[in-house]
Amino acid sequence: MVEPTGLRARKKARTHDAIADVAITLFLAHGFDQVSVNDIAAAAEVSKPTLFRYFATKEDLVLHRFADHHGESARVVRERPAGVTPLTALHRHFRAGLDRHDPVTGLNDHPEVVAFHRLVFTTASLAGRLARYLIEDEEVLAAALGPGIEARLRAAQVLAVHRVLARANWQKIADGRTARQVHPEAVADADRAFAQLRSGVDDTTRDGP
Amino acid sequence: MVEPTGLRARKKARTHDAIADVAITLFLAHGFDQVSVNDIAAAAEVSKPTLFRYFATKEDLVLHRFADHHGESARVVRERPAGVTPLTALHRHFRAGLDRHDPVTGLNDHPEVVAFHRLVFTTASLAGRLARYLIEDEEVLAAALGPGIEARLRAAQVLAVHRVLARANWQKIADGRTARQVHPEAVADADRAFAQLRSGVDDTTRDGP
DNA sequence: TTTACCGGGTTGCTTTTTTAACCCAGTAAG
DNA sequence: CTTACTGGGTTAAAAAAGCAACCCGGTAAA
Image (cartoon, rainbow over the protein chains, first blue to last red):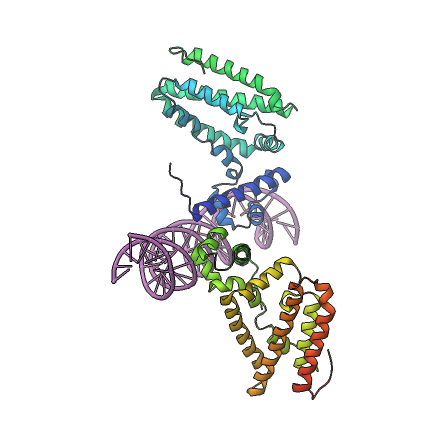
């Protein structure tokens, strides 16, 4: 993956981030529906068409953070080391996410991150669009897992596990506990969930995370 | 004069200032000849053609600060209140500059400003180009003062006075004195210089500053 | 019930910026 | 005496950004 490193690319990335940052700041401060894209463009010192060149919809201003992980599961499966089953690779990857307190695992207690998640979960249009993202994620993961209906089922189950685990972690943190406190339970939950998944869909090969 | 206030104009002004600031910082740190325009463009995160769209020459990166005052004397003369002679208007204007410690009067002891002046005076190409600026300034001042050779002479004398006064002030400050200490002498010097000028070129009307 | 505004997006045209390549002069190295 | 850099400065084409004007659906005021 050769990412361009010229001035153009650097400034493009900066503009992208600047718009997203100002948008999320405004959303967190006033609520998604209370902030217009005009407000965001003005605050980011960018024209409206420019804003829409970077983000297809208003929702994407928020969800690009998830979009960054778009297709990640599929990639993990495709790029897994030889001799490792897909499920094990996904399990390890999720555990690694927990260990580094990756926000997508829900196991992150930075106030901004918590507020961000609440914003997403409590704003209908955002939750809706997020669901669409998950469906696409599911499709590419299914493709990575192989052909046929079985792959699709497995993909759906894996992403369901992700969703439930992340949501549970977030809920515990929203209840006031720290990420560090929750971490052991989160790992245990994940191990249990993936074990259950394995016994159901992957019991031909036992290799543990 | 309707100055545009849109995004475009704002960003243009910012780019201009960003380039100039980074250039002067580098020049002060390493010397004019030790810094290439490539270095400046890179540090300012701008391409070389862009840099040259904002500044015609490398010298202008430094001298635009003087260029900001370009034609100022002529303007002062043109926009003077009714009943005030050109010389008086210029005298008052210079005194006002002293009072607010305007760097162009040389009466400013901020280390950066002092270093900046030393940079200009001790770098041949800069001093040379600055001279060209003064000549142009002289031409428009002469035009503002009227037609004929007399106007040109008066303009030359006025700007000579400016130059000498500013240089004297800067020298005192370079010797370690503060602007506040020097201020009274600077005012006295200016009054003496303009009085001498007046008795020579303007003794038809006596109105003092 | 029009009418007017607001907010999410889009379109076409212009200006600005990047890019890469080049010119020219000086100068250091082989 | 070439040859190859380096540094100031330019050029042409392509990408990016800005601007103004517009569409459309909703909703509030007249």
